[in-house]
Length: 121
Image (cartoon, rainbow, N blue to C red; front, top):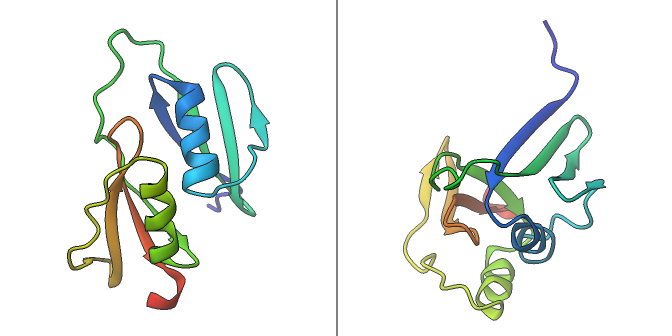
């Protein structure tokens, strides 16, 4: 069996704020699909990261998913993250995830995501 496309879906309470966070702060760029209930970012050929407006009240609790994103520079990302008013806890030593050095951050809804430097491979 082969998988033609992988889609990662994160259910969020505030879709507009989450869209801006992942587009501008994480740097995923403009969504390939953007609506009032679904935002899809193309990550690479065959993979998408999607935000879905939560239909649950209250919304699902944060921390149910953790994603690892590779950025050009963790330091540049950390600066952009803090410039947007977020508090970085990434000053500590990186964690090892599958042999990759990565730093933990949280998004606007307190979901954990990991950032690694493309030079850390």
